[in-house]
Image 1: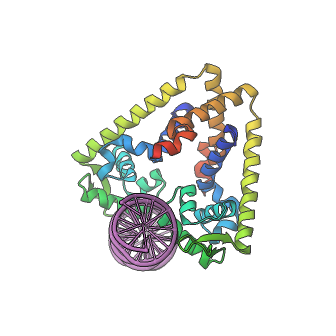
Image 2: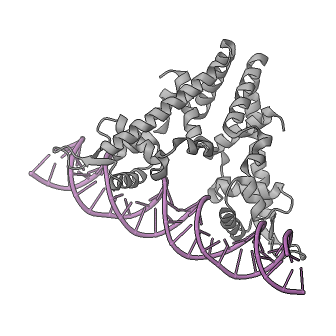
Image 3: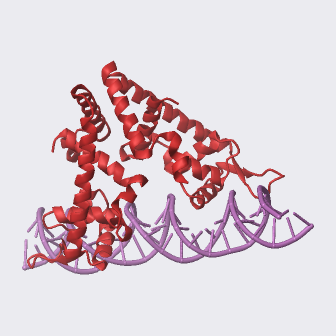
Length: 154
Length: 154
DNA sequence: ACGTCTTTGTTAACTCGTCAACAAAAATAT
DNA sequence: ATATTTTTGTTGACGAGTTAACAAAGACGT
C-alpha cells in the first residue's frame, strides 16, 4: 500500500468516527456498532483470526475483543472454531449474516475511497505532491516511520 | 480566527487524543483527565459558564458536563456560584488550583501550536497555499461551512 | 395572575472499552 | 519428564460518557 492510499485510509477512519458520517451507513450501524463492523472486517480479512490477533490488528485490548466477539456471536454474525491440535487458541469466521455485513461495509468503504480520490483529483499535480508530502511527514512525526513501529514497542 | 489557525487547532485536537501526546503533558494528565482539562479551559474562557453553555461548547451532553463538573468540584479545581436573581442556572469559576491547570494547559497548547507553525514553515509558499486550501475544503466538506452550522441543526 | 411550555441541572440505567487477576493450555528450560 | 514461564481468552470492577426521565425554575401567552 503506497503513501497516498495510507492517507486515504486515515481520512476514512476520521470520517467514519465523525458524526456526519453516521447517517451515510443507513441500516448498517443501527444494530451493529462501528467497532463491531471493524471487527467483522478484521475477521473477514485475517487468516485464522483469534482474540489476540484481532486485538493487535485493531489496537484494542484482548479483553475488549473478547467482549466484542461475544456480542457478535450472540448476534449470529460470527462463529467460533478450533484446531483439533490446539486447545488454547479459538478462531472466528463470519457467518452468512456476518459476511453480508462485511460486504456492505467494504462497499461503503470503497465508495468513500472513490469520493476521496475524486476530491483529491481536483488538485494540480504540484498541489498533490505538496499535500502528500505534508501528510507523510505528519504521519512519520506522530507515529514514527511505519516500519520502526514494532521495533519501538519492545 | 483565520483558516490556518483553525487547522492548527484541528491538528492539536488530534494530537491531544493520540497516545503519543499523553506523555508530553507530564503531571497535568496524571490526576486530571483530558476532558476535564478541556472543561477547565472552557470555564476559564467563557463568561458565566453553566452546564448548558459548556456542553454546547464542548460537544458533550449536559448530563456529561454535569458529572465532569462534579468531579472538578470534588478536586477543588472549580467552584459554583449563582446569580441571586436566577435560581435555575448555576455558574462555575476556576479556583486557584483550577486556574493553574488552565495556565499550564494554555502554555502547552501554545507550545504545541508554535511547533506546528514551525513545522508548517518548512514548506514553500506554494505548498502552504495548497495545504491550506486542501484543509479548508475538507473542513467545509465534512462539517459544512462554519456559519451554516447552526442553521442546519434545526 | 395563571396555566402551559421550555430550559436547566441531576440522576439512574446503560454501553463500551480498559485494567487486573485468573485458569487453562502451550512453550520452554532443565 | 517435569518444572517454570509465557501465551491465550475470560471475567469482574471500574471509568467515562450517553440516553431517558425527572423536578424545579423560568418564560410566555392570555
